[in-house]
Length: 432
Image 1 (cartoon, helix red, strand yellow):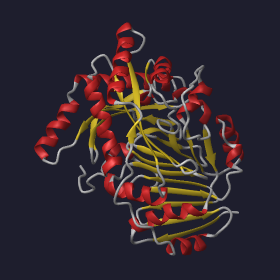
Image 2 (image 1 turned 60 degrees about the vertical axis):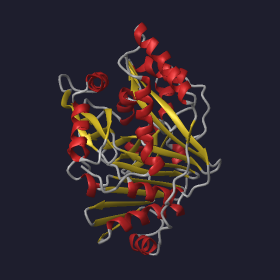
Image 3 (image 1 turned 90 degrees about the horizontal axis):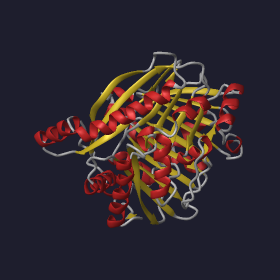
Image 4 (image 1 turned 45 degrees about the vertical axis):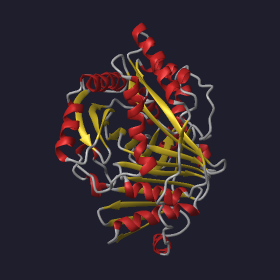
C-alpha cells in the first residue's frame, strides 16, 4: 500500500542536490528536472511537475520490463508510475536494421521501472510517495542528513574518437550520397570519450548547476549512469493529445546583447537551418499520421528560435489527436526521433551505422515517464554524458545535421560548440 506525505521546502537547489545524492542507496534511480526556475517563460517546456525523482532498491523487477510490449502489459496491469529510457539501438528491433559498431556502454536496450520511492516537486511543495521500504518521513530524514559532496571545479578531459581530418572526410562522403539522392539529411555524430574515474552524482550536480537545461535528467542502472542536460523534448502525450518538438538548427551565443541578437536573427533567417528543421518537421508529421486521428496533425510552431545558456536553438512543435494507441505503438511509429536520424529515416539510419564508429547507446535515445493514466513525457538524450563505472568509460556524443548545403568545417565547429558546455561549463548567469 502506498504512503504519501506533502511538505514545503525553502532551499530548492539544496533539495535537488540531495535527491541526486540519495540515488547512491539504490540500484535504479531516475531524476527528471525541468529547471523551471530558469525556464519558466519557455512555453514549449510545459511540464506537470518541476521535478520527478524515482528510486528502486533492486534491478530484478526492471529486468522484466525491457521490451516495449512488456511496458504495455505492465501499464495495463498496474496503476503505477513508470520511469525509464529507450536506447537508440532499440531501432534494430523496430526496423530491419543492425549495427556492428563497438558498444562501450552496454546499456540494456529499454528499461522502465516502478519506483519504491517516488518524489514530486512543484514550486516549493514536495510530495513523497512510498510504495515499499522507507515511508515519507524516513525519506525526509535521510535527505536532510545528506551533505552533498564538493562540486567539481575541473571537468574530465574528453578526446574525439575521430580526428578532424577523418571527420571532414566522412562528411564529404555522406554529402556524395546526398547528391546521389540516397538521402536528404542525416544526423552524423562524433564521440568524445575518456577512461576516467568520476563521481557521477556530484558531477551531475555540478553540470546541472552550471548549465541547467529544461529536460535535465540523471539515470542510474547499477553501475551505468546518464548525466543529461537535454534541451529537447521527444514527445508528450496528455490524454489523446500528443506533441513532438524537434530541435534542428544551432547558433552560438554572444555576451554583448546586440551581437547576440544578430546571431539569433541569423539563425532564424538561415536558409540552411530552416531547411534542416522543415525536413524533420515533415518527417515528424508523417510519423504522427500513422497513429493520429484523420486531419488532426498540425504544426503549432515552425522554426521558432529559443535561447539557452550557450546556444540559440530552432524548435518546431507538431501536435496531433491520437487514435487509440498503446505506448509501444506510439514508440514504433515515431522512434528514433527524426532530429537525431535524418530523412528518409531508415536510409539515414543505415548511413549513420556505416559512418559512425561506436554505438550511440542512450545518446539520441529517450528518457522520461509513463503516468498511471498512460500520459507520457520523454526527452531526447542529447548534451549528455554516459558513464560506465565498471569499466571507467566516459562518453559524450555530439552531432549535427548534414545536408547538401552543409559546410563540413562549420559542422565540425558546431559539434565543438555543443561540447563546450560539458568540457568547460556554461556561464550560469547568461540566460535569455
